[in-house]
Length: 195
Image (cartoon, rainbow, N blue to C red; front, side):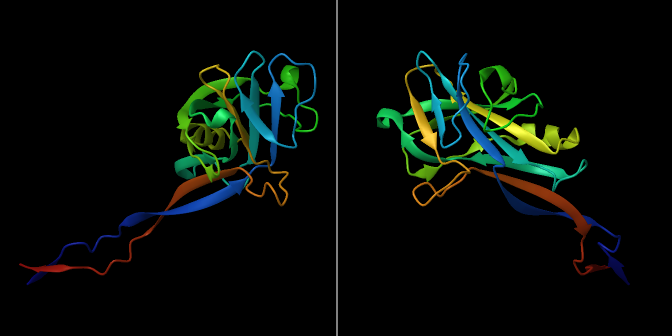
């Protein structure tokens, strides 16, 4: 007599990657009363630090979606002094803002540290881990999320990365790569053993 080993209905998680592009981005100077620059994205330490804000539309996701990972990927156009330096990315408190009018006084507040990386060269994408921020935003029913990037060492180092307002010279807009999992029936053929 043969005995079925895996005849009960089982499920498997199928992962798929989704690449989102920024809906807004801008750079603003700390404690400045002037509007931010949204023709390019800059991060700089120095005596008057410059931070970058990048917003993504999450409306294609729903509460309950299984988010396995999320990676923010800016394209490093220039690295100040060609000097390796560390930069940090933070979540922000949900707040509406406009890239054409945002300034330090109207920025979304910085929240939790998500990742710190060392950038060593220009001319390529770099990866920041932002899974927790994306999971939280989707679970809280937010339709968008803003990320905050700064020079983590507060020194005179910085980098510029391509904006969503791309052109022929700066074509590589910021990306958010989200890997989500969907449960599907496992259609693997049953196996049998001899009793």
